[in-house]
Length: 151
Image (cartoon, rainbow, N blue to C red; front, side, top):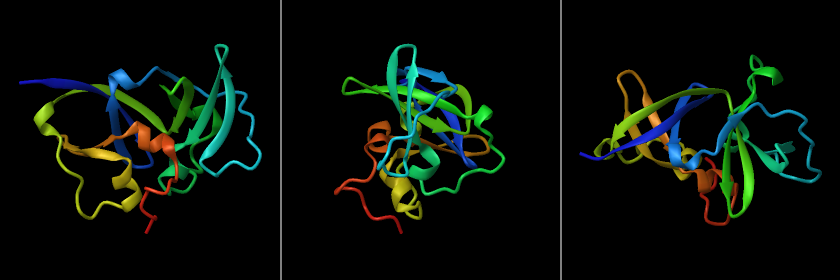
């Protein structure tokens, strides 16, 4: 039986997971510079250990409202590298690393929001929650001609 490890994190009330191999680091974004004329999903850019990182607001990307309880000091980001560029996906809370059986991944529920389905590779049932496995490439892509319109 084959297993994979996933880093879990929370955005709003939903638990997400992404393969450990896709995460470069976890950090607190500081000194973020706004990007003029960028979409609402681009929180800004920052310098992280000499690298320029584009910060993506996961809440905005998923169509969620800003969380009034989450202050700037509590903001976290998961760092990923794609196409030679560095990105930080701003999340609400980091979880733990879980090991899941390859066969535990199920198709997205039919009633899952279209935007969420677009960025999900599937779901896994945990003891008390549903873990949405995030497709980082689609999450970083933002709106594209291929993406279904949000309902």
